[in-house]
Length: 550
Image (cartoon, rainbow, N blue to C red; front, side, top):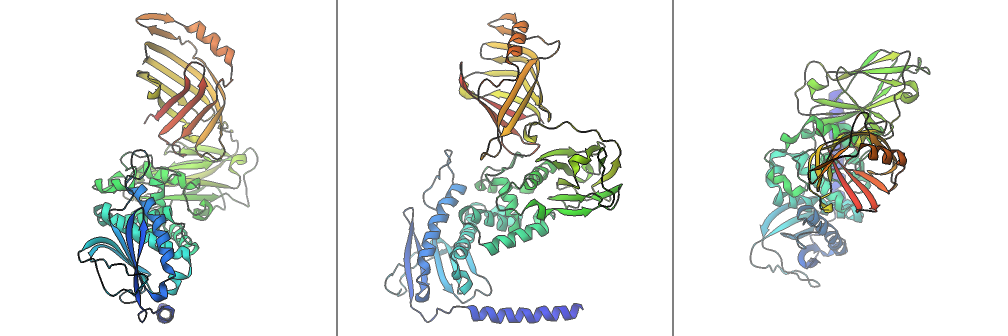
C-alpha cells in the first residue's frame, strides 16, 4: 500500500511540475525596461520585460503601502511616529524571472549590486550606476498565478521585503532561532501591511490548527500567530523581558530564555477568547474529547512551548441532571510546567493541582473548555490531566460581576500627572463577585499620611467598541470592621474614622463621577489596569495605575 501510494504521489508530482511549466509566462524575448518607484522621496527600481508593463503600477503602489508600515514597526520614535521616512536600503524588483527560480514564486536577498539606471519609456540598454549599493533584491518568477490577482502580488512583495528587514535588523536572532522566528515574523510583518489573500490565510490557519499544540520552535510561518500575541495591538505580551517592538529582538541573546508557563498560559487565554487578528475560530482549534461516562480522566495534550484548547463533551446518554455537577481535579500540571484554566462565560477559573473545582450542570451545559499553556519543562512519565467525576449536590458558584483581568491584588499608584509624591503601601484586591478590599499602611501622598483598611463592592460593564475598557456601574466603600482612618498632616495626627463612615454611608453604591478602567490584556494574569475618574470637582481627571502583585 505504501509503495502504491508513493507511486501515485510521484505521478501527481510530475504532472504538477509539467502543468506549472506550462503556466510560466516567458518574457525572455521581450524588451526589458527599468523604471523608478518613488516612496517618501526614496527611489526604488523595477526591472521588467515588456510583457509585465502593467505590473509596474501594482508594485509601486505596494511599496508605498509596505515601506511606511515597516518603518513604523522597526524604527518607531517615542511619539509612535516613524523615526525614518525612508528605508535603510533601496529596493530592486526584477519581474518575470525564469532562470533559477524553480518552483518558487519569488526570491529575495539583501545584497550589494550595481543598480540599473532607469530607462523608461525606452528599453534598458544595460546602463548601471557604476558602483555597488546595498539593496533589497527581489526576483518575482514568471508565473501567471503570481500576477493574476493584485493582492497575491502585493502580499508576496510584503513577505520579501519583511525578510530584508529581518536580515538588516535581526539577522542574529533569525539565524539562531530558526523558522519560527524568521518565517513567523515575516508573515506577521506582511499581514500588518497587506491583507493576506484568501488562499494564504486559509493555509496559515490550517497549519496553525494542525500544529499550535506542538513545540513552537518546530513551527514556521504559522508562528505568525505567536508574534501577533507578542506584538499585536489586539493583545500584547505581558511577560517581562520581551521587546516592545521587533527591533529589540537582536538585543536578546536567546529569546527562548523568556519562555515560561506563564507566557504560554497567557497566550492560550488570548487565543481562547479569539483575541488574535486573523486567528482560526477557537472552535476549530479545540481538541475534542467525548466522554461516555463519569468518572473519567482527560489528558491535556500539548508539547513543551505550546498551548492547547481542550474541549470535553460530557456524557450524552447519562447527562448531568439539575442540581448535579462535575468535579474537576487537575493532576500533574506543575511538574510538567503547565498552567490551565476552565473557560467560563468569557472569563477563566484557574486550575491547580490539589485544588478541585465544581461546575454545576446549569453552568457546564453539555461541554467544558480548558485553555492550557506549557513552558519548556521536559515531559515526565505522568501527563498533565484533569480527572472528572459526577457530584450529586452541586453548590452554585457566586456569579462573577468583574472581568477576570481585574481580579487579584494590586499595588495602586496615583498618576504622576497629578504632581503628588507617593510612598508606603497602598494595595487593592478585587474578587470575582465584585467584593473589594483596600489597605493603606503608612501611605504618604502629598503632605498627608494615611493608615486604614476598607472593604467595598464594584460592578462594571464592557464599553462597546473598546476592547479591554469597562465602565464602573456601581461602587461602594466603607471602613473595614474595627478599622480606623488615621490621617497625619504636617506632623499632626487626626482620627477621621467617624467622618469617613458617615461620608461612605451617604454615598451608598452611587458612582459620583464617570469612572472607567482599562485592562492591558484580557487574561487572568493581566499585569496592569488603568483607572480613570473623570471630571472630579477638586482635581479634574484622576488616573490610578494598578500593577498586579506577583
